[in-house]
Image 1 (cartoon, rainbow, N blue to C red):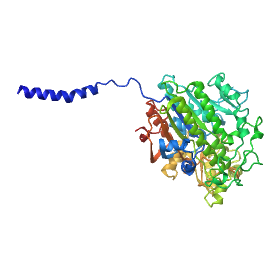
Image 2 (image 1 turned 90 degrees about the vertical axis):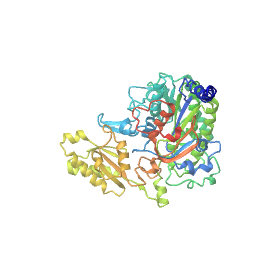
Image 3 (image 1 turned 60 degrees about the vertical axis):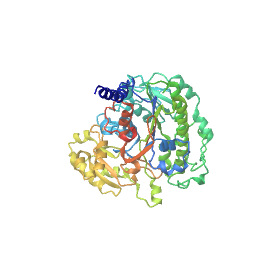
Image 4 (image 1 turned 180 degrees about the vertical axis):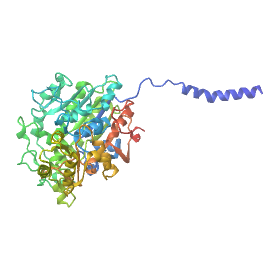
Length: 550
């Protein structure tokens, strides 16, 4: 009996001892995070570019690295209107919507200030890096919530470094957040990268040295011809279409583009070429080296926005040779940038995401050529007609004070002083616009919940409506219609051509894969928060994309 019991005890010890040894292992003493997070926002990228140009992307380029080695969310949508640059950048990094974060457009009419407001304007700061009067009086103060960059700083007690970089001021400032070490943007008047006193009193030496190179003149000397033989651009329309713009001079209607004439004279023209992207990457590299981003175990963040696709897309459209060439070159630039990160930060030591602030509609002329719905909405004539109608009926042509982001703002001080019936004025405006064939829906925003809209459209309008900053009447155009000129195109609508964007993750702790379920731009910030194990931003309404973090 004693022998039997001894045998049982011995066997139990053999099974239990290993388990005890395993459970007694001490947990990790630190939270696992990457050395660097790189956020990439491409200003005006349609999701379908990923596959329209897939066969032409380089094997070692950026897009195939994302698609083949990273995780892609194939059905990522923008959940609000208007789908414009400032809103998109802010929503990506805040996980919020304009109704909450307060950036309701690139600009808007502020009823309290009774004037137009630019999204990043700040009269309390001044330009750094250029002469007085340059476009540098900018900061994130109009953004009413934190970004994921702010939350990273809070999580590390501000030991992280956060830098925002973009040709457009709003593309660098809004993503980097309130507590960023710096945001830099391009001054098209002198070819320098500048900032404001919100961040610093003078440019760091590395930025001064970068400006001294005047890379823009080097790019101008190279000119812009197609990367490959022009007859191989079969995914685009023929070059030199009458409905394309001419941002590089009215005499230059197609490839090759002579840029030498802009050297030392026009530093803004580079924005409408792929060299705006190349210049942005070089600035990002200089910032990473100069600020030693990703050099230690305290996570840093670099927020990059590529603005040139938007300049090119607005002028030439999404079906142009110019835009195809722009993306083929950007693909190579991104591949080179990833090689740079591999060398400087370490492969697998950095996390990258890529998305877009909005997509873009077809050029109306292109749509007409191929018998697709769409065209130009004569908003100028509408405003003239409404001025006459309101004057005849209510005694003043100035009852509409602004037309921003497809919203009409009423002149409330004037209406009050004249003791007019606001409801009757709104009804008159809505009746006129509802008869215009280019208008799909027009309604009083105060009665949004009563309007017969689909649930999706109602949510998008509600998410874009800020009680203190938005207008009084919403005008939604028919599919394919837009305000603008006879050449080029734009964006801002709810439709998938403006609202369906790419979303890709690559690098640290990201396994290859994809999801086709509907995700949203506002899901990016909470997903990053989950990966980094930090708090989500203060106005976040998005949810974690679980597939990315598994």
